[in-house]
Length: 158
Image (cartoon, rainbow, N blue to C red):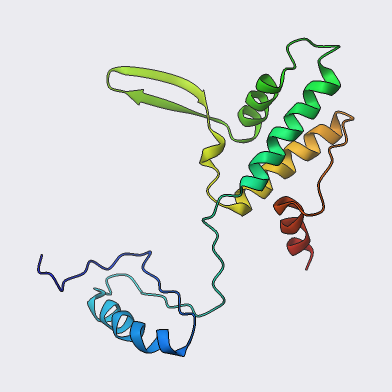
């Protein structure tokens, strides 16, 4: 492939912060549109950029806090309700399992990692499920007002 050739992919996009960047990036955008083979339609969407790929450390931290709350609430009645086991249970119930093949070894039904949550929206949905499951089991979980989870919940209402 020549140095000036670029492969156009379905995920190409540009963030433009001001009119000066527009002047710099517009030739690239036009070039990408010209290279598109149009065997499938090409869509162009102009709107406010929201980074949905950022994983929220705040949401991850909240999940761990909630699992510690579950342990505190239930450990005296059920010694197996450790923080670690509650994390595993929540992930199994709400993220599911997957089969992993590693060379000739096949590991069936492995609990998915919270790393499989790709963005703040998926984190919010997962935490909703955990929150309501706990509520159904008579455990009220605290949601810090300044947490990313609460901010996401407020955005849903707007």
